[in-house]
Length: 350
Image (cartoon, rainbow, N blue to C red):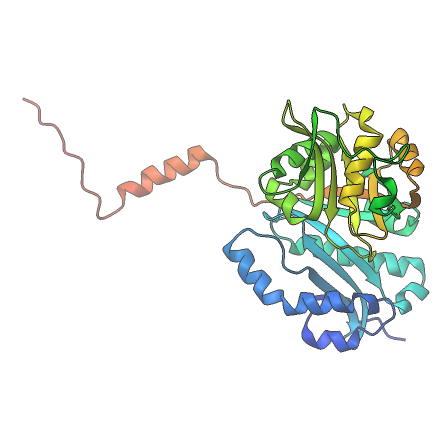
């Protein structure tokens, strides 16, 4: 048996789609079609203006062009392109049935190639289930470090009429005098951005490199926040995230570290209003806050799973540059040799 052909990794092309019929890839078909359709507009708009990514990037790995072995889907996470996110990393069933080392080698090559192709990226973000030991080991091998642990809660909000304030023990219709419920809009996005800056771990905040416009790009309505009217600062937020892979709406709950006393009716009102129109949804919350976890369970939420947010920096080697002193000396010498340069007048003595 001869040696295996070399592994090739290339961007997704139109002729690849009919070949991606492996069960591991079938659920990604709509996303892959969208990525292929918007490849051209995405490249054009990225070169003209800083804006939200239209479509993800897809790389395909194969030895035989007729049998794709795996793929990786990644996307710019901010407008500047300094931070990218790993969305999906899949191996074919043939690779999954082979020894674990084969899968690790294939997926590692895909991750390295995706990072190498993201020219302006300074950081990468990836999420993994806390129970997926193989994926966590792969990400650690590629330089990713765990920075945040989140609990995913499945919630079926009660109909709005069943928790009205006129019932005993029901949800109050009004907030304390110093708090206001405000929607996330272009005018109020700065308040939500400052809230996230205070609540996120410092290293994750730095690697995300998220600006106000990026926060708006990654959110959709209804996203709400509780604002301290006297200080004009957001103290809690429930941000509706853009549709993910779970098929359910997702809310990200953020609470300012100094406002834990809001666990109760004010925060419940925030969640109820943000979940308007949803029969059930996923609520994301920091796993490290045990008091908040107990309170979410008291609302009838059931833990759906735990995810680890991992990140890594990207360091690129630059060619050595000549020192400033050498450049100045060269400029002085070459400047005297320019033919169009007028000679300096020589002062005459007596």
